[in-house]
Image (cartoon, rainbow, N blue to C red; front, side, top):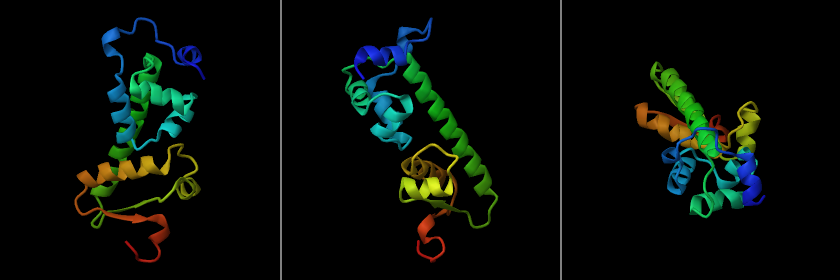
Length: 146
């Protein structure tokens, strides 16, 4: 997809101020904080990985529609993190299962569109808030391996 097609797919909403435009550094930092690969984000946004790399390099201006979508991903992730923290704080021995890869994750949670790397990033954020959180891979949960 070329830059012209990208601009059409993710146009600037009317009245969006220039000073709220997402910077290349912000896009990359947020993408990495959410545990999302360039390819996953590109597929989610229906653009090529090359387009995302160009946005992160500053070669292409990041359309405000993309910024709004990234903010939505951040909001949804924050809600997931908060819900998990709330559920775990009441447990005497809090523990969470995470996943080695996308196949394992989507087999356990087909309703969640995010990759396993997103889930591991979520678990890392939860671990900062839940004292003594035990983290186990799903494939190790039954074997007693940590």
